[in-house]
Structure formats: structure tokens, C-alpha cells
Amino acid sequence: MARRIAVLGSTGSIGVQTLDVARRHPDKVEVVALAAGRRAEEAFAQAREFDVRCVALGSEPRFADVPEGVDVSVGADAVAAMATHPDVDVVVNALVGAAGLRASYETLRAGKVLALANKESLVVGGDLIMPLAAGLDADMRARGVGSARGLAGALMPIDSEHGAIYQCLIGEEAREVERLWVTASGGPFRGRKREELADITPAQALAHPTWNMGPKITIDSSTLMNKGLEVIEAHHLFSMPYDKISVVVQPQSAIHSMVEFSDGSVKAHLGTTDMRIPIQYALSYPERWDAPVEPLDFTKLGSLEFAAPDTDTFRCLALARAAGERGGTLPCVMNAANEIAVAAFLAEEGSYLGIAECVETVMERHDVQDVESVEQLAEVDAWARALARENIR
Ligand SMILES: NC(=O)c1ccc[n+]([C@@H]2O[C@H](COP(=O)([O-])OP(=O)(O)OC[C@H]3O[C@@H](n4cnc5c(N)ncnc54)[C@H](OP(=O)(O)O)[C@@H]3O)[C@@H](O)[C@H]2O)c1
Image 1 (tube, helix red, strand yellow):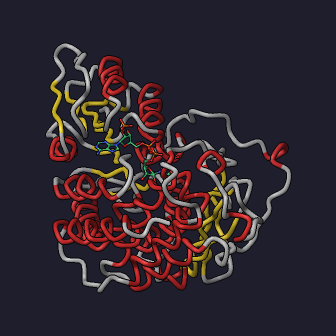
Image 2: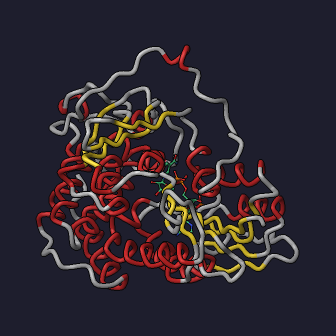
């Protein structure tokens, strides 16, 4: 039976690639609901192509050319409602930013599989999401769902690094895992020093060397904030303490991440740099379906390089790790400040180096609390955004 999916953020980079996976596997994936932000026309075109009856939009469309028979709803509640739609089995959360937390939370609460690209959900609300995921995983396992050698698959990471680690861990004992190695491309400014980054423009930062992604994650990749968010994501997803999660720069992006075991063995996951592979795996697990892309040609790959990240220059990685280690509401604050600072940089209202400065200032001013609820996190997030706006440099 086909997996019935909702794609939240369907007009974005991950959303469009998810629909491409669905297009290639019509017998295995049925798209039943879509959610997007402002690009209503694109979302409606997707609804026509995939014969989708439910579309939610983050904001009111400027002009309405609604396809016949399509139910369109507007607003944050409508977007979250797509996650709990009774016809949906799997929710692909490809929204961007902390705005995706609510959908992740509602998905798991409704007992649906969460295929998660929106890493900010886990950064901000990992303490709320992971117990729900563990509960659903146990339920699914009791129903005989999933692989005999791995998790049942209640929460499938789409991030290529976490998809890689997920696969390396299948069949392994958690107590024998020594370290997670999260790989990083190093971004477009790898090798530069801090003083050389002062005049970086949005156009320069948007030119990522190996991945073609949405603007927010592309800037995060250039500042290494993305890697910091991924360290926190890995901590939650795989219950690993921070001192056992290392970042290594691997500029070719051929190794998507690695797991080191207590006997010194290391498993690495390699593949073509195409997000459709991890997206498809998140939908196919525990099966594997035919690849939508050319496999990696090792004879053309040449050498593989590795280096330690430069956290003096790329301070966002160190700030995110510090926020994760402190825990509680600090990652929420760190993430919110980063979202505001990145948006300001993209709008040419703030500088590139000002991103880390803003994040640090807002983190320093926060009295950390334990995470209690989605509502509490929304309040903390709003506080951090307001303070970040006052600290754009
Ligand atoms: N791109 C990648 O290769 C990649 C890889 C790993 C992880 N991720 C993660 O995946 C997530 C999405 O990244 P992306 O690169 O796909 O971002 P993106 O291209 O900017 O797409 C974001 C999507 O979210 C929608 N959206 C934004 N605000 C919304 C709102 N208020 N209500 C409803 N929809 C809203 C956008 O709709 P409109 O465009 O219609 O406004 C768009 O469809 C991020 O968390 C990112 O870190 C991405």
C-alpha cells in the first residue's frame, strides 16, 4: 500500500525534491496534503499535478487561482492541521525555522511518522519531541512495524548527516557506539580568517560549494551554524552526549557522516550529494527503493580530505554547541536569534560577522529554564527574537 504523505514546505528546496521522489514512485508514495508559505501558485500547481485535495498556506494568497475541488486553508493552525490530517500516514516536515516545531510535535502526538528535514524542531524542542518519538516507536514495534535490526522509524531524519548516522547504527548496540562524526563541507568560506569575512555579501554567502538549498540553511552552512544545529539534532536523535559528537570538515561532501565503535571500527555513509537520497530513505525505511540519481563514481571522486573546523573564525558552531550543552531553553534562544540575524543579513540590514555577535548577546542575556511545553518555547522564542532585533549589527 502506498505511503500517504503530507509535505509541509512543499514549495521549498526539500519540499520540491520530496515531490520528485513521489513522482518517481507513484505506486509507493501518495501525496495527500501540502503546506507552503507565500508561493501559492506553485503550491496550487503541485496540487494539480499530484491530485491533492488539501492545501494550507502560511499567509493569504495575493490572488486566488484555486484549483477546483481543492480545500485551501490559511494560517499557522491550518499548516499544523495538515500534520494531523486523518488520511496522512507520514508527514514530511520541510518547513524552515522554529515555525516547524508545532508541526513536528502535532505529527508525533497524532501517532504519525515524522520525516524530519526541519532540524530547528529538534534544536528548539528536542526535549518534547524525542519522548513522543520514543513512545510512537515502541507502539509501532509492538505492531510489528519497522526493521528487525533497527528502530521502527517513527522519526526519520532527512538531514543527510543524520540519515547517514541512522543507517550506520542499524544492527548495532547503542552501548558500543563510541562517537558520532558529523561531516561538514566547510562552506564557501573554508580556510578564510575572521578579518576576511567582514565584508561578505549575501550573494557570496549564498554560493554554497556542494549543496543547492534554501537561503536560510545556505547562510547557516556558511557560518557553520548549520553544523552546530546538527550537533544538537544528533544529540537528541541518537541520545548521544555532546562530548561524543565531533564535527569534521570533509570538503567533497561525499562522506555524509560516520559512527565510531568501541573496537575502533568506523562505519561511514557515502553517496552522491543529492538530497533526494536521504529524503527517499526517510520515506522507504526499512526498505530501499531504486535510486533517483546516479550512484557515486569512486574513480572520479579523487581524494577525500578531512580537517578540524575553525571555530575561532566560525563562532556559530561553538555557540550552538555551548547552547546544546547547557540545554533547557538556551538552544531555543540561540536558534531564534540566529533566525533574526540571518534574515537581517539577507535583507542587507546586518553584517555577516554580526550574526554570531547577535546570537552571543542574546544567549548571554537569557535565564535558562527547563523545557516544559510548546507554548513556553513560543514565548521564549518571541523574547529572543525581540532582543535579537535590537542587536543587529
Ligand atoms: N535544502 C536542503 O538541502 C536541506 C538539507 C537538510 C536539511 N534541510 C532543512 O530543511 C528545512 C527546509 O529547508 P529548505 O532548504 O527546503 O528551505 P526553503 O527552500 O526556504 O523552503 C522552506 C519552505 O517552508 C515554507 N514556509 C516558510 N514559512 C512558512 C510558513 N509560515 N507557513 C507555511 N510554510 C512556510 C516555504 O514556503 P514559500 O516558499 O511558499 O513561502 C517553503 O516551502 C530547514 O529546516 C533546513 O534546515 C534542508
